[in-house]
View 1 (cartoon, rainbow, N blue to C red):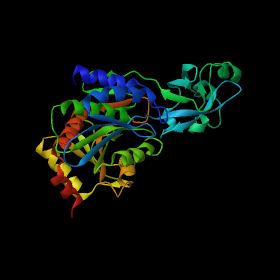
View 2: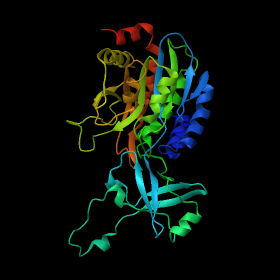
View 3: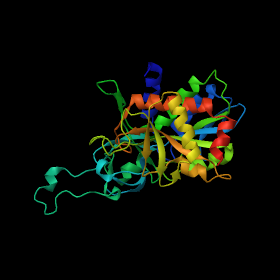
Amino acid sequence: MNDRTWARVKKYTELQGTSGQEHAIRQSFRSDLEPLVDTIHQEGLGGVYGVKEGQGPRVMFAAHMDEVGFIVKDILPSGALKVAALGGWNPAVISSQRFTLFTSKGKYPIVSSSVSPHLLRGSAYGPQMPTVEDILFDGGFLNKDEAWSFGVRPGDFIVPQVSTVMTANKRRVISKSWDNRFGLVTILDALEELENVQTPNTLIMGANVQEEVGLRGAHGAVNLLKPDIFFAVDSSAADDTSGQNGHQGILDQGTLLRVFDPTVVMPLRLKEFLLSVAEDNHIPYQYFVSKGGTDAAAAQTELTGVPAVALGVASRYIHTHQTVWSIKDFEASKAFVVAIAKNLDDANLKTIMGD
C-alpha cells in the first residue's frame, strides 16, 4: 500500500459518522470525488455520486458512508444515557469502549458501561449477557441537568472512537468502520487509476447513506441515476479465525464473489462475466455466501429491475471497534473494480441480461 492510499485509509476510517449523521464523511468524500469525475450528484437523503461520462451502459459502483453506532433515547437522572442501536451490534462487544457523543454544543468523550467483576462476587447469577437496552453510556455528567447544559438531547449520535494502525507484519490493518469506508477508499483509488482511461460505459461511482439501518439511501440513488447494472462495494464478515477448512471469507484469499445472501442471488450470466474478468486479469477471488445483505438488495428492485451484486472483501470482527483486514484483499478488490469498469460494454451487458 502506497503512502497516498494509507493516508486515505486512515482519514476515512478515523472519521466518525453513523447512519443519519454522515455529513463529515460526505463532505470529505465529495471533495475527494469531485476532481475525478465529470459531474457530481446528491440524492435526497445525502448519498453522493460522481459520473464519468462515456458511451455504453450506465454502470454503478456504490459504497456506503455510514458506520454502526448509537442514538440517544433518554437521559437518566444520574446523567447516564440510554441508547438505541444504529446497525447490528453484538451486545457482548459494546461494554467498556470509548465513543464520541455528538451534540449541538460540541462533541464529548463517552464510554459504554459495564459491571466490574468485583460487583459480581457472591452473586447467585454470575455474569449475564446484556442487551443493547441494558448498556448505559457514561460521559461523566454529574446528573441529568448537567448533561442537558452541555447540549445533550435525545436524538444525539454516539460513534466509536478508534485510531487506525497497521499490524507488525505490515500486511494487515486494524481499524474501525472498514464496513464500509473500504468502499469509499476503493472507489476513490479506482477512479484515480481510471483518470486517463476511456471506459466503454458511463461510470457512476459514489456512496449511499443509511445502509446500516435498512439500505435506505440506495433506493433514491438508483432512481436518480438510473443505472443499467449495480455493484455494491462493501465489506463482509470473515470467518477464518478458527481455521480455513469449512469456512468462507478468509483473509489474504482475494476479493469476494458474493454468490448468495438472503436478499440477492447472483444472476448466472453476471457470475460468468465476473469470473471471466477476474481470471483474465489474474485477480485472486473467493466465493462467498453471506447471512447479511447489502445495497444490492435495494438496487435490484428499483426501476424495472436492475441486475445487482455485492463485491468486496472479508474482514474480521466487523460492526465492532476493531476490524482486522488484509491489504492484499483490498488491493485485489480495487483491481477487480477497475477491471470491471474497463470491460463492461454493451455486448457484455447484453450477455448478462440475456438467456
